[in-house]
Image (tube, rainbow, N blue to C red):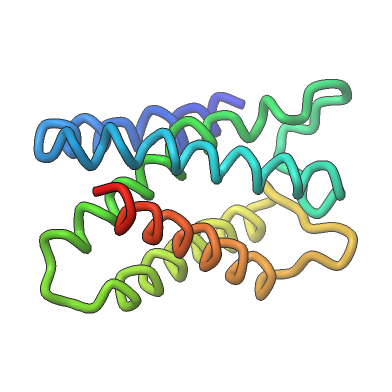
Length: 145
């Protein structure tokens, strides 16, 4: 659990503080939405037993994904929008880059035994879940900012 907190909560917040200093508007608008999307997808996946993160807790397994839902995913959501705003590249390019980045992070977690897939879940479905999530974040950004 300490590894989850360090890697997926505290480390991303270093970038979160940097991003907050750079663009408060994007951070304050995108962080809550990114967190909401992350929590909804995570609860859906845990309800259907598609994935599990270590350490395995008998009663409160959702606690192992809280660092991701309150750290990595919402901060990356805000970071994607910040980069899209300040870049001349197409937004779809950045969405694809960050989708691949998140998929590689999860694949690495799976290789090292921190994550496991169940009930037919696989890396391609992970990629699609991240793609849909980041697309939703971008659509919200276009609508809200």
